[in-house]
Length: 67
Image 1 (cartoon, rainbow, N blue to C red):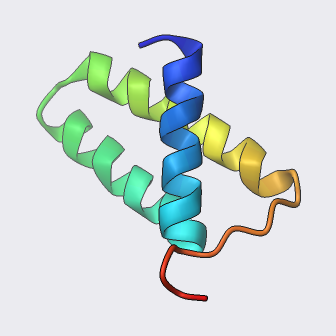
Image 2 (image 1 turned 90 degrees about the vertical axis):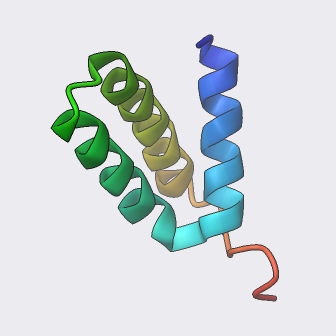
């Protein structure tokens, strides 16, 4: 996964899930860790970091369809 792909995935999650994005990501990371998928955990941690940056940037994200 490239850095651009990780940012694209983070942006999609941030826009579609809003404040629920970190919970969704944490669940994915936990599931991948349980099955021993180290590459998957690494990928989702990078996405999580990007979502955190989007959230801390003051971007006003609301889940799609909630407006």
